[in-house]
Length: 213
Image 1: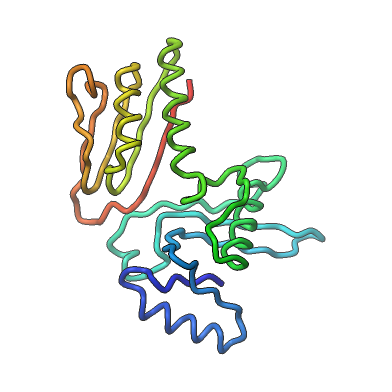
Image 2 (image 1 turned 90 degrees about the vertical axis):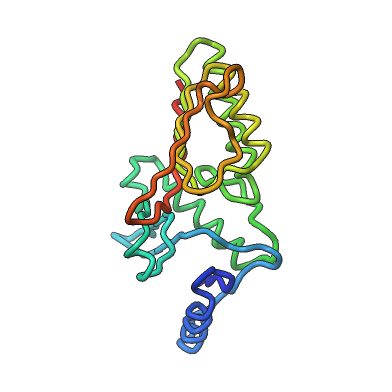
């Protein structure tokens, strides 16, 4: 089991749980050197009908029953049958990720098929997805980006979104907190629209949608 000891609001609770789990004989890993492990993932591996089957959960929720009452979160619970794939690519990726998180002090280096993992490939994958929409727009094909995220402050990503707007990509963004991108500027970002949602519950989910023609 991987327990994040740098988890904001949960440090003391996670230390208590880590000690309880270790006393019960469970192998507990408590983080990578110099990195905060922010992922929310669960992998269950069991033998079913004579074969090993993986059940995977990936979400934005913190597995915290207190914040679960005031955050809106999203999660995907899947096995190979649930996604209709020939093989369980998500489960295989999660297994590779856990193997690296529990067996190495460096960030994950695996060649993931489905997962986008920071700091390994997240920035390059997102920039590549934006560039793909730019190519579709220049070719006259449908091109659109929709996102829901906490903040937008990365200069390289903002520059790519400006290029996408100028190329004709329609961009709609929900940004909960800080945004350093200026939407609606003629000649720069007139195809970018940004709103924030302020309501009873904290908007915690992160969603990225690329139309891909």
